[in-house]
Amino acid sequence: MPPRRPASNVYEWEMSTCLRENPQRRMTGAAGPPRQRADLARRIISAAVLAVALGYIEASLVVYLRHLIAPIRQKHFPQAVMEQLPLLSPGHLSEAGQQFERLLVVEVAREVSPLVVLLAMAWGLRRRRGELAAFFMLGFGLWDIFYYLFLKVLMGWPASLATWDVLYLIPTAWVAPVWAPMVVAATLALAGLAVLLGGNVRRSGLALAAWPLIALGAGLVLSSFFLRTGEAFQGVPARFDWGWFLAGWVTAVAGLMWLLWPVRGSGR
Image (cartoon, rainbow, N blue to C red; front, side):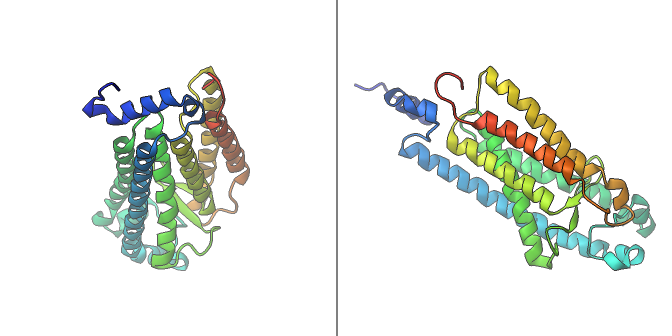
C-alpha cells in the first residue's frame, strides 16, 4: 500500500515519488510527471502574461509622460521633442514649475514599481530552489522586450534599434541604444526559461566559479550604460561603448552557461 501523501504538500510528494521511481530525472532535470509539467507550464504562461501586460502598462505611462513634458522639451530642445535625449536637467523641470519638479520623484518611484511587481510574481510562482530568480529573470526580460514593442505600436518610437534611450534614473541616468537593453532582456528571459525547463542549477563547489563571472559581466554591462551619461545632457552621445558591453555580456553568458550546463553524477 503506497504511503499516504500529505494534503498540504502534494507537489513535493509527487516529485519525490517520481524521482524514486526514475532516478535519471534527478540528473536530467526533467519536469516530472504530467501533473508537474502541466503545473510548470501554467506558471510559465502566467508569468509571461503578467510580464506582457506590465510592458503595455509601462509603455502607456511613458506615452502620457512624454506628452506631459513635451512643452518643456519644445522650449529647450525643439529638435527632439519626443525623443529621450538630450536629457532634461532638474533645472529645466524647476524652471517649468513646482508640479514638474516633482515629476523626477514620481518617475523614480515608477521605475521601481514594476520591479516590485515582478519580484512578487516570482515569489508567488516559485516551487523549488532557483525558481525565484528564474521567474524574475523571465518576467523582467519579457517585460522589457514588450515595453519597446508596445512603444513602437503606440507612438512609433523608437525609430530603430540604434535609437538612444534612458533606461533608468537610479542612481543616475543610464543611457544606451535600444538594442543593448533588448539583448540583456532576451538573455535574461532565455536564462530564466532554461532554469525552469532544465532543472536545478549547480549546487556544489563547481558553482563558485560561475558567480564571479556573472558579477563581473553584469558590472561591465552596467558600466557601458553609465559612461556616456554626461554627454547625454548635451545631446545624443557620439558613440556607445559597445566593447565594454560585449565583454560584459560574453562574460556573464559564460557564467550562466557554466551554472546551468547539465552535468552527470553528483557534481550538481
